[in-house]
Length: 534
Image 1 (cartoon, rainbow, N blue to C red):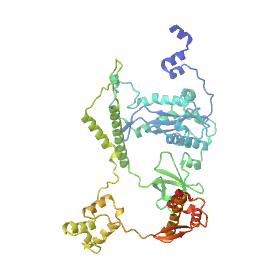
Image 2: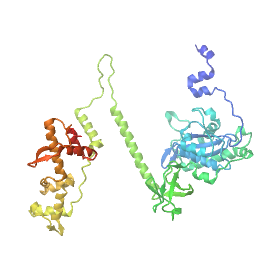
Image 3: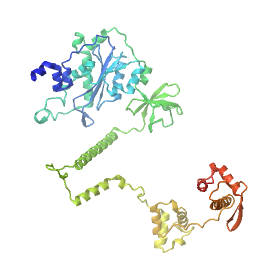
Image 4: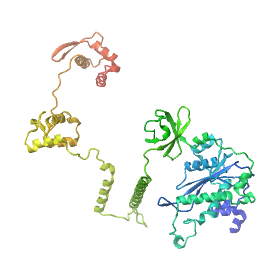
């Protein structure tokens, strides 16, 4: 069988079956793209740095987002983030590459195209729109195809082999027995120090390194030897490059520009209150915004967050959030462990038998703890801590409890220490329905009860009385005939209303109700509908 496998399968197929797609690809033959000129094509990628650095007291492995010119092997731009990169890292690297600023200049300008490998940060709408505005296409290569962007992949390998392996706390270093690091107590680099060292290495790569493909020249020498004209970006285009716009219009007030419920100020806003403006910002950067005239689109200037929190406050908030996240993770882990059920292994057909058991007291204790942690059960919107009693209440209490006075004797005009407690007590009775349960309970202790309901008001006259007479006539006719259909307009119905015999023009009344159907109150329309009158 082994002879048959070696005979029928290629080396690449055997390697793929043994170690996966990457091993199979190592046996493939790849062509090279034809030589091009500078800025004909750039390739971009993220590189996860296998080095632990100190980021505000915590160890983290940063990421590098960079671009390289395929013809000259020059690194055109790079940006470092202390966490997994997002579109702001891509835009920051592109911006410094396009502007040809230090430490990458004079390398840069606008490329003919940019090749990436389906990374969502490279293909997001913000990045594609920013490059599309500069007429630079972003070529989306198939996923998991590093051979199609070999220049940037070679750079990713070179930076690790030539630079990162020499840094302290390199995670790829060979480990001792039991997985122990050779230098577990080595002090890590600070984030600032690591970024500085990386930029120094980029400068070395561009100015002193001699890639084999350049025939003894450095990337900067190959770049300067190129005769292809460079395309730079104007200051006006750079002002809006990579900025996101929510499409809304804002007004400069005396507090500045109100954006996302926060105020932003700048000295140039003086004398411009009332101006309509639009706001643009870099993704994930909310400490600074760029303000433009809403009518002309002209860039007015930058504005900065007012009353920004100090770095100490931000660190304290972040520490509190981290502690809360750790508590929740620990609670989730403990809850998952308790939730898991184990059963006895069965050798015969029998119902499953749980292995864990608990006493009745333990079950009651756990159920009680669960009830206490249930926030919905703890929610008591009607329970508000009592504040100190007002002086008027204390005055009434002193008269009733200490002085032996009856509540009915405390009428408007009775004062205690200059306060008219009688008027206050009368007002509590008048607004009894608006008092909270706690306030009513306090008054009930003193003997104050809800006021007696007011006597029934006399029956209304006028239109209300006419409605009642017409309804009584309709009900009488319906009780006799079983329907109100066919009542002639001149029909008169005799009913007894308010102890008097009344002649009601039922036909006219019904016609009026039908004509006013759309304007009738809901209760009247409901009664007439039940009678079949409308």
